[in-house]
Image (tube, rainbow, N blue to C red; front, side):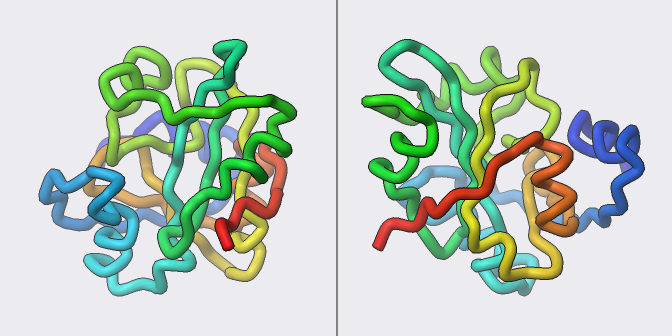
Length: 161
């Protein structure tokens, strides 16, 4: 297995993790529940599978949000956490140039630049969570506290109720 940037970061921090592969069918449209689809393929609870969403503020600042597959992000809560008036998802065609990742393989670790990162507090309800390894078809499994440390992230309530 080839190491991804996300794995190299975890290795450098001496953080323990596992990886798990799944069959990538190319379905990565938000409207189709890609993260839920991945959880099903891995036979795991969607609440433990976290998707990475990259957003841009009205001042063009980039923010990274991680939310479980079973929930959508509450934009009001995300704007409050980021301290901005507006947030919009980065277009899929911009993602690679901005982060080094493609849709469906975007990890909160190892992006081209370090962006402010927010992880939904529900991550703390699990011993281990799943995040993209940085390529389609592969997930990293690690303790939420280790992801928070490695990403320099803040935990906030992002659940759309």
